[in-house]
Structure formats: structure tokens, C-alpha cells
Length: 228
Image (cartoon, rainbow, N blue to C red; front, side, top):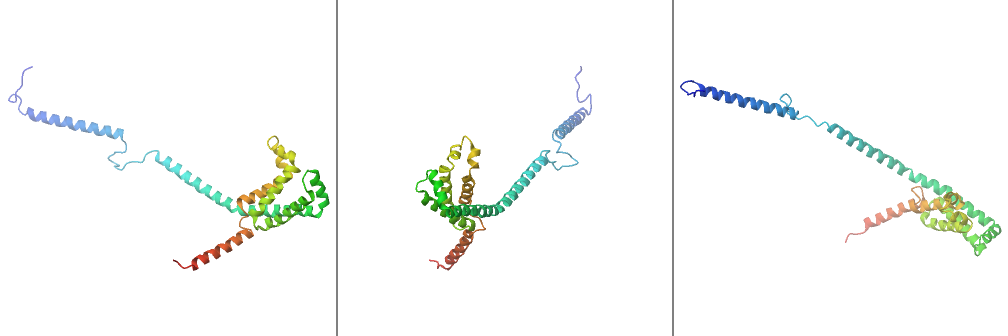
């Protein structure tokens, strides 16, 4: 090769500069094309970024969760509305049943005294009168919804005594034969009394009306009390 000089090739420097500029432009175009391939959101025809493909799925999942939450809340509100009618039905039915069993004991004291004696209950005649009076009076109060939580305690105690005496076999079969325990006569009476003791008498009761009256009186007294 022979060395070239600027005198031998006039304009060679200009051609080299043009060639370098062309190479730089080609390299820029290649880099820009690679960026478009790697990131399809960057396009000249649509400069706004496209949403991620997972966004619709996430929105759908969040909407489903929100709908499920609203549906469960509606179900809970509907079930809460049914609580008071259920407590009313329990009180009316089992209150009357308690009254019936108590009246039966008081109506035939000698026969039930003999039964209590056979079950090994001390002072059978006295206990017949006490059990019959408790069931009759507390049953009517339970039916009316007056002092419901308070009167449910002696009713539960009476049914426990019945389990310990007349239904001792069912009580001993509490773990070995649960069906025998829940099929015994005292179970449903005791279960109804426990429900009222825990959940109260509900809205349809004298307890609720008396509570509302006392709450209004307390609010009126508090509003009339002068501020210190």
C-alpha cells in the first residue's frame, strides 16, 4: 500500500467525516429499533404507555372480592334481622312448655312426690312444690320476656337436677352416647334457657320495652342536669 496524502485525494477528509456521521446515524437507528422491540409501549405512533396485561385480571379479582364482601354483609344483616323472631319463638314455645310441666307437678303433688322419692331426691314433697312453682312462674315470665336472663338461671338449675336424678343414665352417657344425652327430656328445656341467658329475650319482649323507657328517662335527666 502506498501512503496517501491529502494532496493526492482532494476532499478525502470531507468524505471521512460524512462516512462517520452515517455510521453514527445507523447505530442510533439500530439502538432505537432494539428499544422498540424490548419495550413495545414506546412507539412513535402511540406515545402513551399501554396498560400491563395483568391489570385487567387484578381489577377483576378486586371487584370479585368487593362483591363477595358486600354479599356477605347483606347475608349477615338478613340473619341478624331473624335473630329477634327466633328468640321470640323460643321464648313463647318453651316458656309455655315450662309452664305446662310446672302446672302438672303442682296439679298432682302426691304422684310427683312418689316419683321424686324413687329418684332419691331429699324432701320430695317440698322439692315438687319448688320445682313446679319455678317452672310455672319462670315459664310465664320467659314467655312474656320479663327478667328473661334472670329467670333462665333457676330454669337451667332445675333441668340440671333433672339430669342428675331422673336422667342420670343419659348424663353418664354424655361422651359415650351423645344421642342419648340430647334425646333426654331436660335437654331441650335447658338448651332454650341457655339461649335466652346468652342472647337475651330480643326486641319483642317486656325487657326491651322497659329498657327503652329507662334509657329515655336517663337521657332526659342527663339533658336537664346543669353543667358545672
